[in-house]
Length: 335
Ligand SMILES: Cc1cc2nc3c(=O)[nH]c(=O)nc-3n(C[C@H](O)[C@H](O)[C@H](O)COP(=O)(O)O)c2cc1C
Image 1: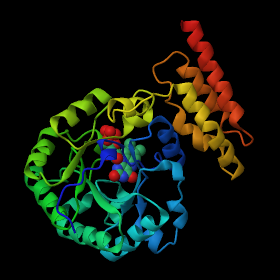
Image 2: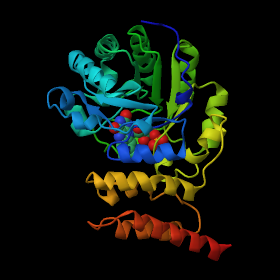
Image 3: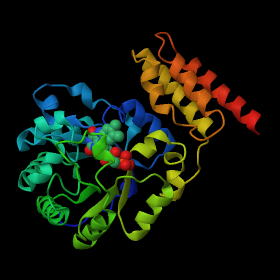
């Protein structure tokens, strides 16, 4: 067990774990936009893997690396076994979800409710660390319900640090476990970036990433300049990948060149063909690509053509090529 903070370049910019959104098709697409950003799976529950044997939930492409498997659970032995399965499946690291407030998740004692049980979280993390060789990280809130974040967050971080965790991502708002929907819990409780900054100073041995309401690379750069080890972006990266992920390698990681959007579409075509051959439907892949041209001429035609045509059973890569041709037309008309 090491107590030194982990300097892991990929964490400088990560795409948040998002249920139903960051599935393996989404991650493959995001990887065509950024070679360097750290990607996360949707949350996979430890009981589904260990008791349910749902190993298909671990499927991913080798191209997705660096990619972290996010687990949900609260039983140390079950999480340890799930982490071991994740490492064996090839994930680069394993993250424990202590931030998700949905009802389903609460009923299994997973997610944000664990902010109330730092001892339990520490036991889970220690077991996950002991069971397998990959880095174990934690994603949490600043507190839940009537907790006072200024007390709850440092207590929580202290325990996970003692358990051997070296990297934590903090979604900088509380979650209300009763009364707010999961969606409201991502917007309604106010953001407190200042408190997370204080934690950076109070826990210099932890690598901290900040998350919540960050919508541009300018904002991400400002947090990194302030001294954060990483910035995690969720909804904005998903809805506007062309302005965030596509420019991230150059701006955040100091690497070029930047692919243009049409090249990104071109890079998706062989993947689409091979996934369709394996039985996927076009819409399952293209639904993640709808925001690629956000804000540009032709964006609406792109979205509409894909939304209307990719659901057909026989839809193939030609639908994507047609949509791209509409964007090109839209752009020449606007020029
Ligand atoms: C559709 C959706 C699903 C989410 N699912 C998860 C999840 O499985 N695990 C998790 O830790 N957070 C989940 N979140 C929360 C995000 O990871 C992130 O913390 C939150 O959206 C705030 O970041 P943002 O303002 O950049 O979107 C989800 C968010 C969204 C929008």
